[in-house]
Amino acid sequence: MNILTLLGLLAFCLASHGQLTDQSIGSLCNSHDDCSAIKCEFGGLAACYGACVCEAGYDRGDQFMYKLISNINRYTNTHCTGKVLRRKRSMTHNPSNRLSRKIADTIKFEESKINKRSVKNIQSSQEVLLDALSNCGSNSSIQEMQSWFSLANSLRLLSPADEMDFFRDWNNFIRPFSKDTLMRDDFTQSFKRLQAKDVVTGLSKSKAFQKLFWPFVYDIAFMNQKLAVIGLTGNVVPSRAQKSVFYSAVEKIQDIRVPVIERQVVYSFDNKNLVNDFIHYDNDSDNMAVNNTEKFTFDLTERKEIIRKTDAAMELIKQTMPEVYRGINQLIGCFAFYKAEDRAHISGSMNAAIGIIWFDPSATEEWTIPFYAEQIVHEYIHTSLYMAEMVHGMFSDHTKLSQSKVMSSIRLEKRDYDKSFHACYVSTGLVAFHAQAGFWTRAQSLAETIDTTMNELIAINQADKLLSHAGEATLNSMKDFLTVIRLVD
Image: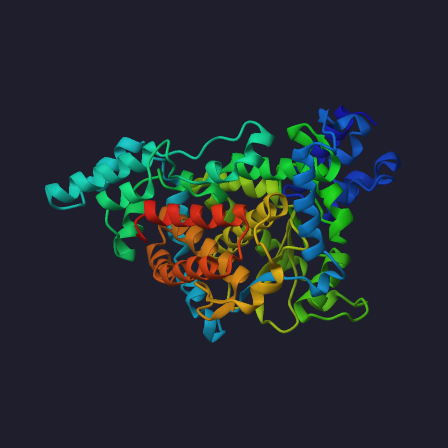
């Protein structure tokens, strides 16, 4: 079966089913024996391209390949050894839990604001600037904001074009400040720290800032995935097949099959393997597989509403931050919807199952579209960090992470260093997202908890050296961004 036939079948599936689900992928592959024989259902269309998919190959003896493969092996040995159930994970707790009540703030947002926001034309940078300045008050305030926006707009993250350069110089590709542009100390001398509400106001008035937060930059997400493919397979593949090849390769080390299609996210409702994995994972259990998974799945009426709201949330993300939308469709294989047994969590992702984001919309009161959007962006940031850790390395000694406790900016309790590291990144990204989307109350509540976590992360790493060179670059990148938006100094 040639590639044109496959693309025709894919177009038919999209026209017939709209958003691809487990069933539509299965029907695409199972109707053709030559495709299903090579597990296209879970390997994606790239599995059907055949052995000639590669554009170029690398010598595994090359120093670049040696370091890249070493990082991937270390990630695998740390996170992907043994059963999925025992692996570290990122979970968003039920808002009824006292440690995460602030998450419920998002549920209160009016969906009418979403509709209004989604149809609003994007203003030019000049219009945004003028709008911001008109609300600043004094001439000195106007001049300061104009200078702030102009400087932020002049900063750029380097665009990765060569995978070896990107791998060898991760630090310079993800940090807004550098000796070639502007040093952090020079910025802080001119621009003082602001109150959280003023930071949110600034973020809401200009799109200049979001391009300085590397998890929100599509080219960086794509290049990290490309490096993972090179390290796992030794080959560079066409961009149109990269996502599928990555998941075909990573399946061998994750011990879990991820439903995947290029440039799109699969909505999974009744994949029994995924349901079993997440039931056990949710309970930290090594029990035998659950034979009856029906009580954990949503009925057809529930699925229709979940699909409607998830589609709307993805559209909100697309309208607010187009690069984040593209990144989600490139890095994430599927959204897995199932009902958790104990209702302790509402969403989650795993460093041992990259590409799957789990949601349980039944765990709380009815989810609004903004709440769906927050959970998607939340878990996408985690996934971006998992991918970066896989190819660049992040922590120097994983055995010490549980011994170093840091206040989590999300749960507002002391947690292991790596978990609070992730939480601080998530909070930072969500502040930027909600400010741009127009949900300023939520953005401000998240912004107010970041400073303490950031300072503890820096202090503990300085004392105990928990981060690798790439990990320190990643921490400093977050501090750079928080400095540019004037939330820390």
